[in-house]
Image (cartoon, rainbow, N blue to C red; front, side, top):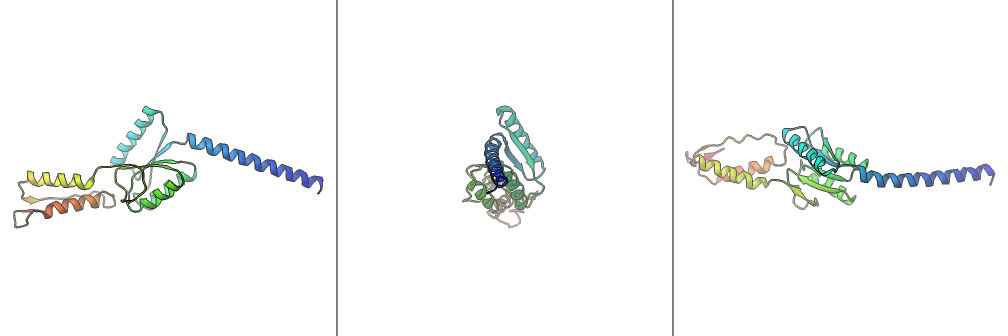
Length: 194
């Protein structure tokens, strides 16, 4: 082995060790300094208020929160954006399950990689391994609201059910609950109809 070859091997070995140490230090320091990602699917008054809450939490606790808006309230967009954030080192996410079933795969991938996850605003599909989710019981709330409305109407009349966003995870749940309550009332000209 020539002297040049030996020098090259030593330089490459030192470079390999240096890069490995840098990568280990960077991985440790990045995970400590990267904020929690509060992911909001799209700009919308509801999500804007959630963002206000996330920023207030950061100010009160000193815990960093990165508020990020997506471009579309569809699971493919959420998954793409969140996986990109994961790829650059983020390991803590607050997610709105825009598609309760579709969220399952994203949650499982992030969970396998030791990410911290919480859901908000809508429940993920039953069996999804999201450790915590906070949301209104949409079915129960819509049922009580519809029963209260029908009572206020004296059990007669028509209800206009205006559905804001058909792609929202809560909309089909809310609609089914309203229809179930309305179906409990006779339609003999005096009953409630949608």
